[in-house]
Image 1: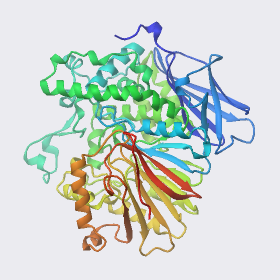
Image 2: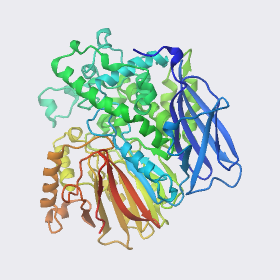
Image 3: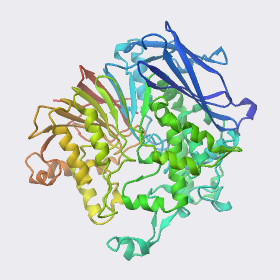
Image 4: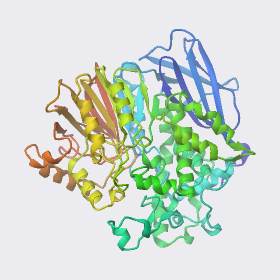
Length: 614
């Protein structure tokens, strides 16, 4: 049973350390009533500014911005901080590694954590717990502890929601009085509101008559869903569902207010009942470790970037997909709900409300008589073009938006779009030049596994790019050529370290131009997923296929778009020398003077894998 409203805790989540730079530190909270939040840092005079956003009768999102009254915050050293609520000290020992909160303002990066793809009901272990263990071991030696956690996409899975999670979402919406929207994104039949695993039957579709005659679906007279997730039975729809979902993904206290596991599964089919029970086991394990994740994020600067599942699978993959969404009021509303919730819970903290905060007035104005009316705000958030951001560290951190500035094909709307358009790539070029070393965060790998990309290309040729998620940089001729040209310039970094996720397996490649104008090295470090995995048997087959077809001597290499680049695969000590690792993990990148020193995977099981960089 849910707790009485009087017993709901004041803080559901937080503090979460978001952007931390020499000029400002941003702390993020989820609270259940208006509070005056304050913070202090040992030995420093600071100014405070609080921004509070009302999301429900008993739900608020709050940001506390700290700025130094002196020359700025000290960098690359431990800063102990305290939090107060309405003037009273907030003492939460469960969030301390020692006897207080602490953080590091990064400047010269030496240890960075990175990962992507965190699905709460996947049966693998949450590897953020491994990151928490690692920080606990090193918290007394600040020079050895990670100063930055980068999460490069799919922090939530809005299109793949567990049955018990959807039950919890409904309970939390009611308990916290989360405000609803009008008009409704997709009015569901009354009978469906209490059901699970059935929403995919009501999501909008493109009629088979309007599909390409070259696609299989046209001749089989098969309607194509606007939302292409194969696990859309519980796809999030309304804004209040997205809001509750975010809270449940990061707050252990929120789970203590609901009880979704007593759902009567007798009303489900046998297969769905078994699915509900399996998801229950995975979620119970996820919930039990959430306090460890909260401790990690209370003590290390955590920055994020969206990929598709933060909104919906295959988000903006092809112009045709975008067109279908744009032509459907229901589909467009669902996608915008996902984007708005990303902005609230992830985007605002990435730049400490600097650029993203420009949307605040329009968002607050959309709440009329405790009902969200987003028609005007939708236009503003869809026009917003500053989701990407940088950190002025060494190496410089450059985080790419590969979803909202796509290079669309004008000849064939079914062709996959380039992950960034010409203008965005030119802007990236300007950011990269004249830097000795750069840490580049691209949600999808720039240099992926050739055999897998070849299979994707075959499906794309058959008119089915959505079937295999053709989300690789090399799928679009223009974007691939421009990106490779950037890497070959004389004035681009000598050391470019690309951090990627998305694919649910991890690997380490190094790349050098065969005909470049200067000696440089590109590292492709892929860590995926934090709590997700690629089928291990299938990945083993694909690894062998890639080894056979695209060996160094293979003539097939000449037919790839990156034939001018020499790509070396680095083996790990996982599974007797595998170079593709499907085991939930978060990566640890160790740097020395801007160069990659070591690359390791901290697995959710507690094991550690290391890649041979030689």
